[in-house]
Image (cartoon, rainbow, N blue to C red; front, side, top):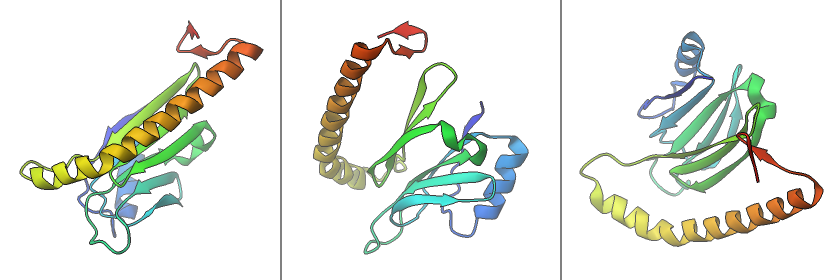
Amino acid sequence: MKIGVWNVRGLYGKEKLLQEELKMANVDIAVIPETKKKLKGSQEWEDYILLYSGVPTNKRAAAGIAIIIKAKYRKRIHSYMFVYEIIIQLRYKLQRGYLTLLVVYAPEEGKTTNGRILYNSSRSDRQNQQKRLHHRRRRLQCKSRENSYRWNFGHKW
């Protein structure tokens, strides 16, 4: 499995070129920071699936993050969650266990004020997300222990 990162500094109008480059490099999963896309969602491309998280429509396009996955691996996507406009979590099924990618766009150096504002405003959101994830995992673990053992990267839970 090939995983790559490529900062294209804005995704608008670069979709075809990006797909061609990913095909040539035979990349299975690509993380694209600084997409400058608005809203959150997914798009089906020819050979890839785009998951993106960006700013609301009433804000100027900035930052943003995206994950691009080969379409043939669609069934391996267990779940994904848009944590914040610059954070996406992807849970991907492997042959044995799961791979969890937490992709984050970190603003460039010198933008500490924006980073601090973002950190403070999203901290409570992240804490609530973490609590929900923790409770969801505990429920799944309890259910799996009752029925059978769960294997995660070769270790019994």
